[in-house]
Image (cartoon, rainbow, N blue to C red):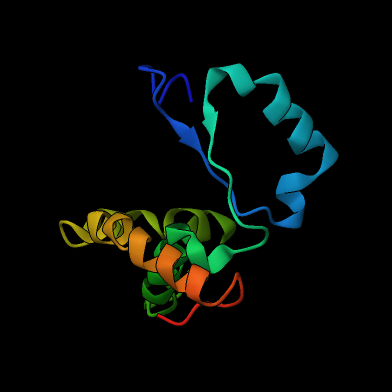
Length: 115
């Protein structure tokens, strides 16, 4: 966080998935809590996290590759080109969708939102 947000304004967010709330991860967050703000997230709500949309878009492009990735290095580098090819404003559109996502979550009383 200190590298990406040297101004100290960064916020850490995770979806409370089981690996993210392990003792080791929780301890690390607590030890470094003075380095950043932690954005509290509804438990296990990955559909509220825009990273899920980004992973889905990258996966869609990688699955259509011809030839498909054959080695672990191919698979590691496969998402890099599609990442650079996202249309301008794609990530901003996802960020701007957050108020609607939160409203949907509230209407669903914390259950799966309908978009």
